[in-house]
Length: 193
Image (cartoon, rainbow, N blue to C red; front, top):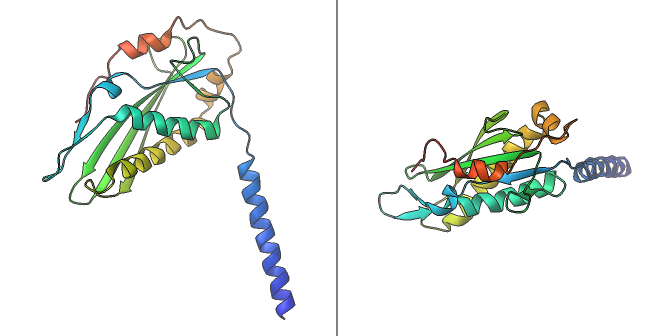
């Protein structure tokens, strides 16, 4: 009886490890694209509201850190606009962050817009995530976790979107004429505080 249980348990563990290893070696997507986080998110900090604490947060560095980590896991050699001057596709990320002081929850929202040749996006994805944490106790850790959650959600949407996949591997190359620089100059329509 014990031997049957032990062999069944061993086979279950073996199946689980094989399924995890298959996910670990999943094929990464390839394409000539650049990630753009507009300069306004690096230059203008936002205040996270709390009745007792005054906390200012610059969204750009936290978004860049999360994007670098998540995109490196899912794509072959992702680059930011500073490193890739002539991409076929530009992925613009617009982060928003809100702190609910009564519930102690960080709410992160990411709007990802995909551009391929003009200043009109061919695809827009909005995603949200929440992270429980205190503003006065290691807030940067909870903010980073919220951005990682929302970035993972955005990448999952991008990986299964046929418009984005088709734009990554175009049949004919389009000249983008420094689309990164053009999009960086255009300010987001609304700044959230």
